[in-house]
Amino acid sequence: MSRYHAQEVIIGKKGQEKLSKAIVAIIGLGGLGSLSAQLLARAGVNLILIDKDKITIHNLQRQFFSEKDIGKSKAKVMERQIKEINSKIKVKSYAQELTKKNIKELVKADIILDCTDNLETRFLINDFSLKYKVPFIYASAIAERGHVYTIIPKEKTRACFQCIFQKAKIKETCAITGVLNVITAVIAVLQVNQAMKLILGKEIDKELFYFNTETNRFEKIKVKKNPQCLACKGKYKYL
Ligand SMILES: [Zn+2]
Image (cartoon, rainbow, N blue to C red; front, side, top):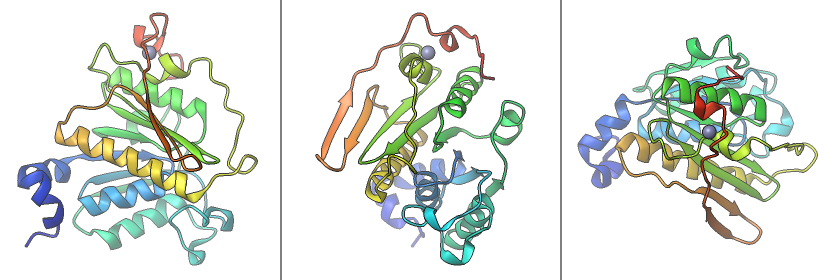
């Protein structure tokens, strides 16, 4: 029996072949990325891991690292963990900050998972995604709430990240506002679910997902393309 038997029953051997051929780049290995990476690795998806930070004790409340790895690179430790989980997939790791100078070289992937915590990097990923037609899945979590949205550049009627968040000013940080480990985990799972559906060629929701662990409210929020959006017009000011 294949190691992927449990999911092959659902997606078939053909579906598994698609997962096993796909490369997903995970930008940021915090509460979202450290779980997303492990789920995708277990499902047989090849990975590119990017995070410049080192592990601290404050990360362990929600990030899938261990005390023995405090002070080490998140990217390098996650690469080791991934290889222990699934030695059959390909994994590359970069302990670097993603910038407009290195994004083309580092992100040679079929799908990008945004697991970052800042708007600048998200606008950079959005520009890259639109220019090179690489789908990207935005995810964010703070306090007890989080969002997931999938950008698919070849679908012309679908809003991009900049269409929705152009005027956003996110001042909240996990250190000041706080974040529960249950919300980062739920949002990571929703994000990975969208990534696997994309790889399998399924239809992807056009709405922005919202989930709140306090109210247990799940919402699918309609979003619209902004006719004034520069990124959608091919003007990539962050790239
Ligand atoms: Zn746009």
